[in-house]
Every structure is written in C-alpha cells, then in structure tokens.
Length: 283
Image (cartoon, rainbow, N blue to C red):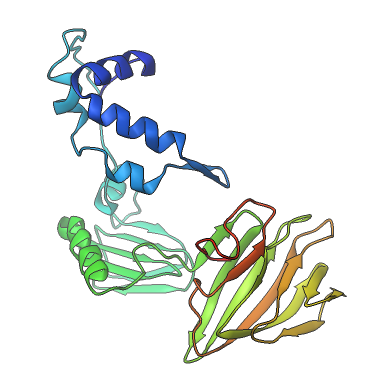
C-alpha cells in the first residue's frame, strides 16, 4: 500500500521516469467527458511506457518510509476473493440473487436476473448476468482472463460490449437479436435528445411504452405518447427527444442487412460528439 500526495508523486515520476509523466499529461490534455467519467485519449495513452509504480518510482526514490501495518488486506481482485470476505450461509455459500441450492457448499453464486439452481456443487463460482454466464472452479477463477483473451482473438465483443449501454442522453438495453433484426429497450432522460442521424443499412420502428417522444423524421415533427409508434425508413434523417418531465421508455425494432452500431451518420449532436464526415460512434 502506497500513501503520498499526488503532487509529490508526480515530481518523483518526472525525475525517474519522465516518459510516463509526459505520455499521461498528453493523454489527459486530450481527454473527453463521458457521463460521469473522464476518458483519456486512447492513442496518447498507448504511447505510455508499461511500468509499475514499484519499478518506476518507489525503488528509486529516497523520499519514502516503510511502516508496518497490521491488518487483513485483500485486493478483491477475483470472485473467489469476494467469497472470502462476504458473509456465508450454513453451507458456507455466498448466494446473491434468485438462487436455489441442493447439496451445494463452499461456493459463490450470483445472479442479476434469471433464477439459478445449483445442485451438488462444491468450491465453485457461478455468476449469471444479462451478458454472460461464468462457471468456474473457485481455485481456477483467475483463468477467466484466458477466456477473455480467446474472445478477443476470435473477434467477439462480450469482453467489452455490455447488453445495457449508457449514453449522455440515457441508456439502451439490447433485449433480443437475430438474423436481420435487433430489439432494444431505450430510456431517454427528461429534456435529453439523441443526435440527428441516419442509417444506410437499417430501418427502425419505435413504440412508446411510457412518457412522451418528440420525433424528427425528415422534415416533419411528431409527438408520440404511450402505445403510439412511428416507422423510420432506411436512409431517413431522424432524431428522438424527451420533452417531458419523466423518463421516456420505448421499444426500438431495427431491421436490415447490417445492424452494427457504426452504421450511423450523425448530423447534429448536443453532446459535442462527432458528426457527418467525422468518425462515427454508437447512438
């Protein structure tokens, strides 16, 4: 555990490893805001040398002291570590969510949605989310990184693309996907507006579940309330806004030959994201 003032650490970093400091300063200068997050510039950060605080600074500085500290410590860097620090039931299990067990012990089981039934498990980790299901021996759970490496190698997206995605205007949840169609549940915050955009490869159908939607479709503006819907043909410029005081909830059905999030030509965006001829990004 290291304790220091940020200013003093940066002074030592500049003295012993100025390349790291310079790369980080450039990355922060080019950083952008994303909801409550600060996103450092990716390309600038890639140029930062890979070195730990131990080697870069602490083994070189003369302005430090070592103090014994007697306490239990865990980085909580794995699911098994969570099992160790969490209160357990009479079978030595940690159960979080809608879970039924039978002859199961010494296990960590967590679900954020569907019912999980565990029978005859011992020293296991089971984590079920809307995105994926993990089943691992508790003493091998760190090997999940090998699965992540394989996902990357095979070009899959589960390691970074969650089903529920947050945006400055609200969020969307990809609730179903199939051949040539995708269904999303979209929530737009009161007063928020999605960018004016169009798609080359997909059409969209919006059904309002609750709240009020202000839809710009080509040259027309339409107000929709609960149980009303609108169709956005392929190639039509459109935008969606919540002019009301409560969250706007709607179901979006996409259909077309390509449904990737990079099929967006953005013409105007109140959040300062890239438009038209610039590089596009998801809704």
